[in-house]
Amino acid sequence: MEKIFEDNYLPEELRKKRLKDVIELNSNYGKEESIEIVYYLKSEQDILEVAKRLAIDETTGKWIGKSKPTSLFKKCVADVDKIYVFDKGEGIIFIRTPIINLSLKKDPLYQILMLTIGGPVLEFVYYSRVALIDINLPEKILKKFKGPRFGIEGIRKITETPFPYPIIGTIIKPCAGLTEKEVAKKCYFAAKGGVKFIKDDEKMLSPSYCDEKKKIKLVNSALKTAYEETGNRCIYAPHLIERIDRIKETARRYIEYGATALMLNVILGHNFEVLNILREDKDINVPLYAHSGGRSALSTGNRRIDETVITKLIRICGGDFFQHGVFGVYDTHIASCDQKLLTHLIFVMRENLNGIKDTIPVAAGGLRIEKLELNLKKHYNKKFGYGVALLAGSYLFSHPKGPYYGAKEFWEKIKDILT
Image (cartoon, rainbow, N blue to C red; front, side, top):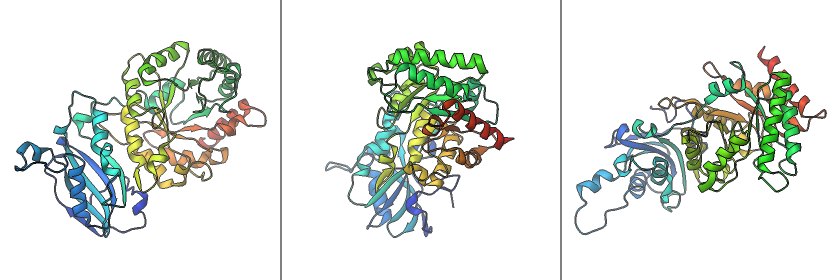
């Protein structure tokens, strides 16, 4: 049986069920002339008929008119390639939608989203559960995306982190109520203790008491001082707060102030498209941290978008970092509760995609020192080494002796584990 994913991942709906049948229909469209869309479906009706109907509804809709459908119309209708049946009315369906319905001169991302999830697929009542679990793009579309600028190899080079070491980082805490000087002071001590990457908390929103220009300049100066004193190179990603029509201008300005990376929410705050816009700008030549806040609102429930799709879109659009969760931590974020999902998302961030670089998985959200060894082990790969960014925010900054000792303790623990 052909695998749904090379790493044998299954969506949560099918984990405890056995494959009962494979219906091979053989699409009229080759893989290079179509987008393959993979859905999980559950319906009281016959899954084959439901799948065929969904393929039509998600592309052309039914033919309207008294005459017979035109030959062009027939060439535009998506069809079903195969179905994996796990139970009556339940399974995985593979739909191929022809790319002649797209304009390759226009924005590909918008069109992909319209064809796969922007239509009424999550709205229809003729099935009770549905999940978009993967999108496979042909090379002629995939090459329209630049993907991450750096990947783990590039970030290691910038931060002077030797292979196979991970990127140790932190998140500015508390998330609000800090002046510019207080932020810079925290960054200084964290970098002095060995941190390689610092990002703003997502709730740091450029309030009046913490001017973004002053903050970024002070942090940049603090990190330079820490480097001069210790030789530890650390980069900083301020939270990019801006309207989409001004976001490139603001991003360039942040870099002029001294930002050596940028973070933005790409799921609910902005969207994948904004990430793509920033990545394509040659003047925004810094790592992009794609913040994950809000993804569980999309990826959980009876009508959802699997995190596979969210992660893949973030990668092709240029996210250098993406937080997937923490192994061994079940009391903080819902995503971390599904350890099989975390393993699969690492695969998605690294799998071969037509030369697109890898996105660095970020282990954050309740990360504590006693979970470092497990998370290092889970992220190890011969090619990428310990290719993970280990971000401890509250734990590091709440250290009894301060952030310098919190960072130093993390760094010493990692060295002990790896030597």
